[in-house]
Length: 109
Image (tube, rainbow, N blue to C red; front, side, top):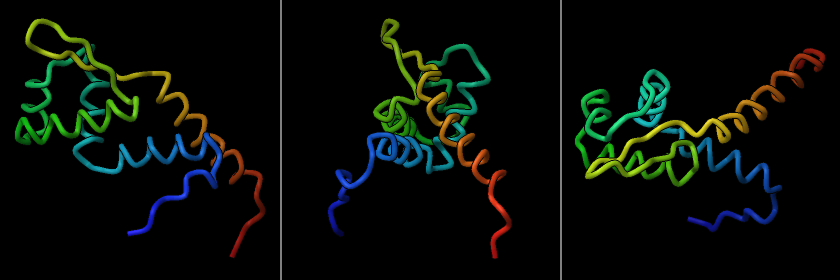
């Protein structure tokens, strides 16, 4: 597989791509939806919710955290996770720009 040539794209394009890639798995969508429905969450709560093995959930959490979509705090032996609203605001801006531009376009095809 070839190397991604990220230097050919803007910083914003690379950042949005990273966020979209992190959300491109249904388990990660389920985790984000769950975190949006609670104030904070410990990893075991997420395992119960998404019905996946704990190591699998941990890997998905790692991907979401690396993308900045979630953040976590160590609380004793557990890690409490929550949504990073600043990151989701960036995604909201990108998606709202898509719809703004669609609304301005004349019909195509």
